[in-house]
Length: 180
Image (tube, rainbow, N blue to C red; front, side, top):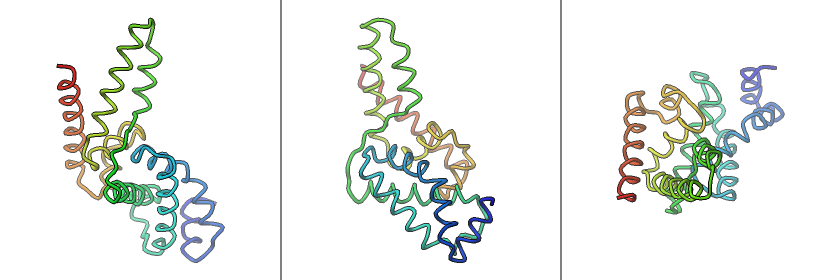
């Protein structure tokens, strides 16, 4: 059974179909929430909230976008709400960059330098405004296109590109400020 059929059956009250959809996207939603919130328990809570909200709102899903895009939009919004509600500064790590930093260490001095660079990067990402942080994480970690991010964030592609550009600029200026 394809995803569209599962969505239609779930909209008509078939809980097994919704469970299959949940199983398909649970790890994606959790990883997104974890990257945005930086805390496993909070990510688990947000993941549960996302699927509760998705279940309650499923009949409103019109199929104009992919189900995954619609679900990611809910996940981003719930994560942003959690950040605002709790006003907790979270630390985010971009997995690809961290792996490159860890894998390129050839001697102890390089390891220290790379650890400092990673620390600067993490602090810079942590200090980004929530929407810039979300766009950066979706683009870098999930390798989403600007078009898909725009659909998730309910913004124009141009606005998403501008936010991404500003996030990169903010990170660069924060890192340059700390190094000087």
